[in-house]
Image (cartoon, rainbow, N blue to C red):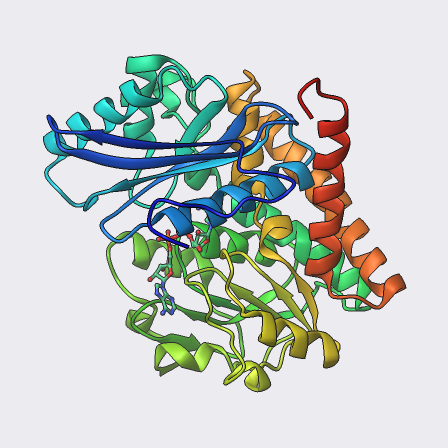
Length: 368
Ligand code: NAD
């Protein structure tokens, strides 16, 4: 695929916009993948090394995620080619210019993603009004503060545990990445009686069979520390998390961390994908063969987008948390039951189910 061309299929993309501005210097791409279920909802990623291909893949992932979560939204994504750590005044000028560029794209509702946050969404609201993921002061539901995605992951783990005949009381959990997703997933699972026996961040892994003090670790991370600074437990390198002795393994950091080379080290019976694309296709196939129940990313980590959509439609924080609990429970149950019945990988089943929802919506629309 060349730099400016894009592959299409029966679902999309619906529209691709390339944005170039000289003052302030702005280069960006918006991919609106599909709008059959409603205006495309998807975040703005700011990074120096983004690409059209990445934007297209992420936009499709949003189409599937939003459809799987039963939201009245299609999928889209945008990327801004820039370093998100630039001085804030420059960042504000770029984000405001980007907002101007998407003002007329009424089929796209932007939200935060890597390199953009609630403050950036406030600038967009200021320019064009239409945005999700606002700060609380502007009526937003702060996703990372309330732990929307982590809650969804814990609910997914609850359902998967029931299917594996495992009680969450005393279940041993390992979490890779103790950021917005990982720390809230940990907190929610501990509330349900689980014991977090391993947690990692970019610096290393903390292992403690007696259970890590999650509130203490959250405080330590808030103060800028690492899991390695924890007083108790055994310390190891960041990769040690993969082979941690546990029942439930939750990737909540980087893509492709489970691959053909290390999938054999996994000891868990359940994997809940908090991160986006944390496992390669080959690794997922091997998990399936070994009987590891794997809840795919766009089903397990939809909590954030459910909260964003709830905010966009004027709902409250409590409503968002309620919808996350019910939708994710229902979706994970349906995906895992069908996967078991048809002896298929959960991801293949989930992609089929979500695409089918999009196709049904397309059949109801005039242009489809
Ligand atoms: P974050 O930046 O808050 O946290 C990431 C954590 O991963 C940090 O603790 C970091 O130290 C750790 N990390 C980085 N490299 C690591 C490595 N090699 N080994 C172990 N840990 C490592 O990010 P986040 O918002 O929690 O997002 C995590 C993942 O979840 C990403 O893939 C993101 O796309 C996905 N996701 C996030 C949300 C959300 O609501 N925040 C929603 C859906 C999906």
